[in-house]
Image (tube, rainbow, N blue to C red; front, side):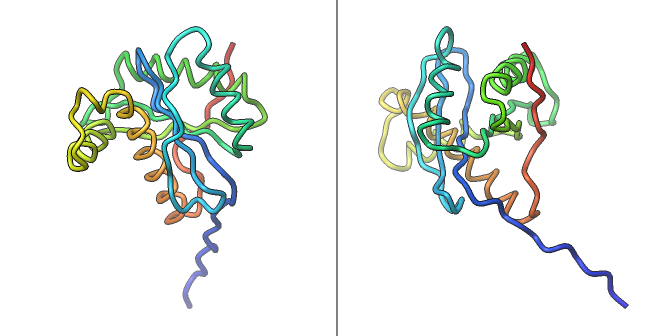
Length: 161
């Protein structure tokens, strides 16, 4: 007798991904079926960034925000991860009831930069879109993880003040 596996369910709805950096925040979105992630914009980090992200979430009627969590290649979290966790907690408080999730983003900027170079863009010209491209990589990986597992990817973020 074999044990039945639960049916994998993919939640329909747009998601927004953000690649949080010290200077810029890359933003990407997916279609409602979660098939493909596309760049949205690059938001300047700081002062009004979270308000702009809230506007984007509302504009796209997003069901969730996926935030890339920077880790070392060994999987350890350092000061950059702590900053992103704090940012994600504040963002979760601002966006509630829309959920915010942290997902591993190791190598996303490297992957995005390689893709831009392969398309013929120099790193200098690509600076304005590298963060968006990294957000696309983060979101596409999260969508694939959810499709394969049938569960929301990463960890849910609790709102903080």
